[in-house]
Length: 317
Image 1 (cartoon, rainbow, N blue to C red):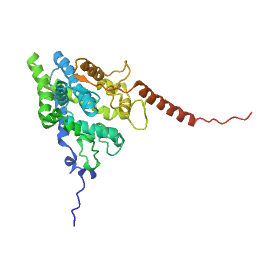
Image 2: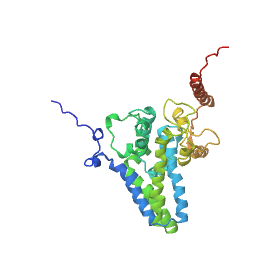
Image 3: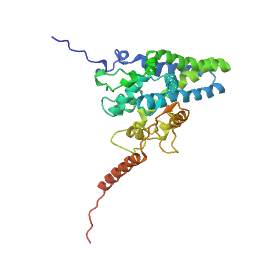
Image 4: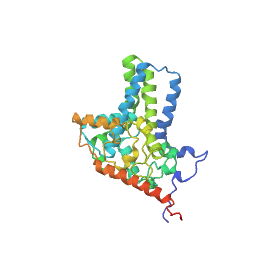
């Protein structure tokens, strides 16, 4: 008789005896355990002014590794980048400690292809907490996994180099570099590790996770309301412009997220500046007419829905 496959651990309930088997311990270490230790260490570590400034600057640098690198370059190919810029973004993204380019981009492509379905890795319909963090710290059943095409990523030597050496990137750019800069620069080795390393990493992780959770729950839907993505300025502020999520899901190959001049999108500005120095090229933009057509169609849809609720019967004389 053929062997009956054992059910995946995620199909069973979480109990006091089996809960460690439900945990993806590698992810949990960098998302929960190390940040918790950093918070405890911060109680006993004075925050120096120069360390605070360095932590903010490093937050922006590593954030660009995710927003301009992992997301807009490798996940969506919204522009092309030369080798020096790709190496820079791979190192910065490693310092953000959110997985390798290959892993992150595969998950994100699956999210776009199967938004709000069982194959969406961070499906908001499974709850706000699940889409924010539980999908990473709990083991997931492989048979529910969406498998997008990542052949282009597998052919990029920078992507493969970073993927194979991911732990070195995490330790080197996530923890050691911020500590060394603060230590050699002004003698604050411990503060550099705690604030510019661990807590900076933790804060940007949580900011990015908000795009998976809050950006599918809170805000406006000016371009489409068939699925959950939404625009919200708060999410944009903490993620260097990634909060205009409704626009992004409708026009994912546009290198911009904030399309208006007044919308906060430092990632868009950085990519544009890089193009002027010939580090980036072929910046993709949807035509203004197509974007406005999407906006008008959504407005018309809402107007039709409003009209349908009105009682248009004629009163007798």
